[in-house]
Length: 489
Image (cartoon, rainbow, N blue to C red):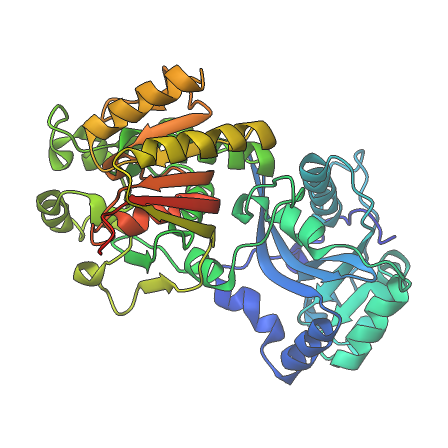
């Protein structure tokens, strides 16, 4: 292995780079294209200036290369120059030397191992250390004092004049080809776990975001920026929005963030998702800097609240469902804050330089439509379907969506009387702080923002209703549409 640390020999000590432009210039050339092409051929990954978040700690990794059949290569860039090293010697760092270390390669490797262990519980991915000599050629290195050659194995050094073929040969030589590849999702996904979709029964290690979602996640969000994300219901807007906010808070730990949602429960579900992602990803955000707001007659106007005035970033989930007047008012503050707008149709908030969309469907439930002419057939059909569903499916939540409050009350009574199953009726005051979602939830379309269930029933909803598409999108697996109608003839 590469020597742990090196003593600091003043002029050529590793320099902290001042900008991403300096960080990235290492690969700016034909060399970069060739190297990336070779790694792409192996289904590998190259990460430059990668920020690793682990609990309260943040660390920048200069270069991280993943090759599925070989493992991880952790690289640190050293800015030593040949003219500064003439006549100098180098010695191994020891705790007794009382000198600062010139590199952080060992502690970086240790941080990566801890992150993988915390996310995966166990991990056996091999890690090799490499050093990128950005300003040194191999010939210049050969001319240095022998102490450099003893402590810095040449086979682990990437020189600025190395060809892509030479770099490839060095990486291959450090680690033998493994017949069973290491998982990109497990390794790179774990290091970026706060951006993953959370694990479920079918994806125990989570999943990467879609390409469209990743593009929005990577979009720069500087001060006074307005980003809009549009897409149909069920396209994954809220999914990527909450990860965008987490990523922002990790990079700017002192920032204050406000999330505005159309219903109280949708905000609470986003908050729960926020906490679940932090726990899964082994990261920590300052939750005291995160606030939620839902417009209602009982709440103070958003623009006059303390949380709005203090927020550096304000995010609106399902913005198309929020009051138009409130939207128009807060938009006037866009020069003093950063805004994230997320909704189905955001043409009024379009910003050509910062507008993104999700076109691919995120959830595509199977739909089963039942039409009939019996006056009270909907109740009977629903009860029959629910009885069968509850007998054959375990621990799956069901949502029943009806057009009016009175219909919800009627159906709730019928279900509890005939099936002896407790139902939850969603209204404007429903809060997860005091109640849990039961196996069966009933609601009108106005109160289902943010909710997702495996199966839902849509009963006598008008397909022309603007919220009909929202109702369809609440199921992740199957939807049953029950519609009473008068048959002609």
